Image 1 (cartoon, rainbow, N blue to C red):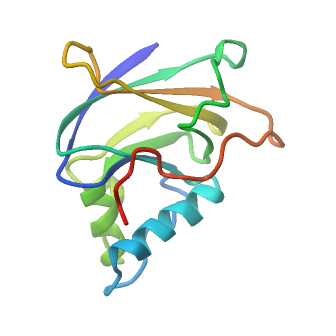
Image 2: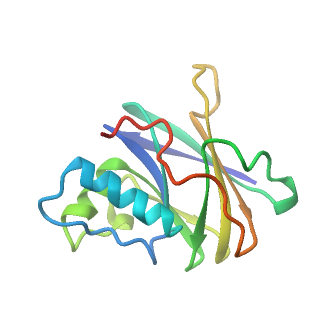
Length: 163
């Protein structure tokens, strides 16, 4: 099953976030380097998977796979993420930045965020980027359930130019 979402991006990245466990607030005076460090720290805790993108309106496809269909989990844009409350949020840099700066800002309340229903559990997450203008989508996000003790990929923000 595949769902396609439009997500605008003025700068930086898109992200798949577990809204229940993700600690969004960084501080009122954070810097870009601080936000990148925060995203990497939260990714290490399996709360977010962020990936870089250019300016524009991106078409992002979300596809849930069975664990036996999950391709190439050693791909460079692959990490594990947990859905603790039965859903993820697909969001952009602006929403991440607003919630990092203002403690009362919620990711789901941001206009560019999309709620993605998913059974509670731990997932392998792979993002595929398509650069061709003829591609149906700009990014394909594939999710498959994985065992609690399985580690996947290095903690990074692929394709990111965030310093």
